[in-house]
Length: 183
Image (cartoon, rainbow, N blue to C red):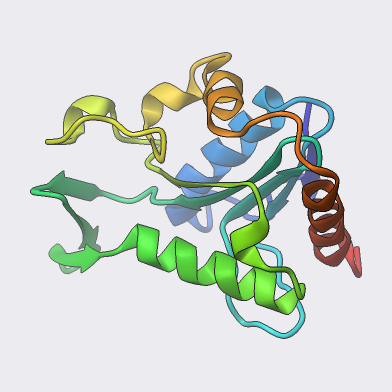
């Protein structure tokens, strides 16, 4: 079982139902990633205002950076559109661009070269099934099916090579240290 930061999901869904997707992701990551994993939810890093929804770090494997899209999202013609409540407008979103930018800023704040880390970038749609997409599923897009028992550990095993180099492990330990600072 992964070590979670914070230990419990910080929002009450009765007051903030928009976090239902992130709650599901939190619970699945906690249960499915092994003992060596540390999972950080929405952690600030000194020197940046950007945050990543989830950073799962295991110095022997790498880091998984996850952007969760839990609202109503439509995927068609290679693009994502999110329904904005209560207006019902569909806003075009770029979750990969958002994730890449946030992860790069977090690494800058930690004084780590993001390009040197073994990283797997993921957009997770915990309420959508694979059938909602008009293109083939990708290991970088997780859907409701990733919540099945054993699915995430299998995906991660295929996405990140093992073992990491000594330099990779040192950089990943530094990232963990920066993320746990002040806890």
